[in-house]
Image 1: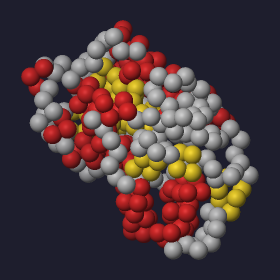
Image 2 (image 1 turned 90 degrees about the vertical axis):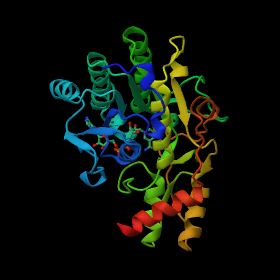
Image 3 (image 1 turned 30 degrees about the vertical axis):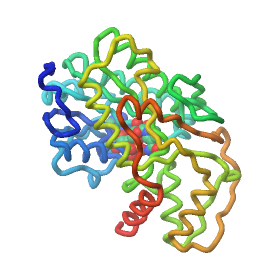
Image 4 (image 1 turned 135 degrees about the horizontal axis):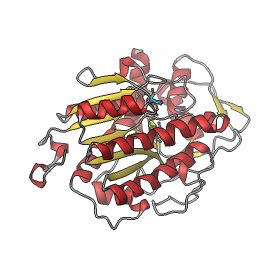
Length: 332
Ligand SMILES: NC(=O)c1ccc[n+]([C@@H]2O[C@H](COP(=O)([O-])OP(=O)(O)OC[C@H]3O[C@@H](n4cnc5c(N)ncnc54)[C@H](O)[C@@H]3O)[C@@H](O)[C@H]2O)c1
């Protein structure tokens, strides 16, 4: 299914109804992406194996299939049946420590599973493919804000898989004319992030403080991260969809197919704790545990390209984002 130029008006304004597959749409980030697409009037099919995702996260207006992205036959028949114009890929094994303990499993899901989706996208003439990459995991230490062209130093198999897929995106764009974009997220936070997971320090701290329990900060707490609110990330996905449909020049390099999606301001874990403690009236200090081996000290992201290419700037203030996390946890 190809989309002719006349149809390409402005998907962000809901002027065109698209069929969009969102993988990982029962997970934290993916479910907000689904909500945003549905809100803009699109038809969404969620593909998710529910390994970490939850039925409760699913938008009731989206269709859903429980499937593993590695399952070639099932993915092929679902692509055939739904005939998507856009594939938005958020399904992944996201646990960095698991990627170190079980790198082959990580590769199977994060590399082979993704190539399976790219392959089916080409078979079904999908117009555009969006990939959830990671600004935190592919640059390594960034004493100054990393722009997309910066050297890459993924230190975990998880980060290596993200970097590898970005090269596949480039290859698929050039060899098969599948238009692709990689969104390199900062540290995403917001409602639906599992406080019992490995990632998501904000959810973990917020849950502890609400229960009046002392959270553990691993290492000095001086680690810097760029925390971005999940609804901003979802909005960036909608803008990226628009950008893909407008057509990308074939002269782009792999790094030019990537966009950092972050706020451009990094905070230390200590600072984060202090802010959360203040708004939850928590009066105790944190517990400092042993530093985690291999953990990055500084993650800073330059966001000028996303501003220029997508017109995207994160607008939700940190205070407002934190308030929404707390409201969600209280309701839970
Ligand atoms: N949360 C962050 O801070 C962050 C930062 C950078 C990049 N990302 C990327 O964003 C994406 C979503 O992450 P998240 O934080 O929402 O995690 P999540 O675990 O909440 O979401 C991942 C989803 O993928 C599904 N899934 C996992 N393996 C699957 C498989 N084999 N087949 C089908 N579905 C499968 C899970 O059930 C889950 O619903 C991932 O690609 C992740 O690498 C997240």
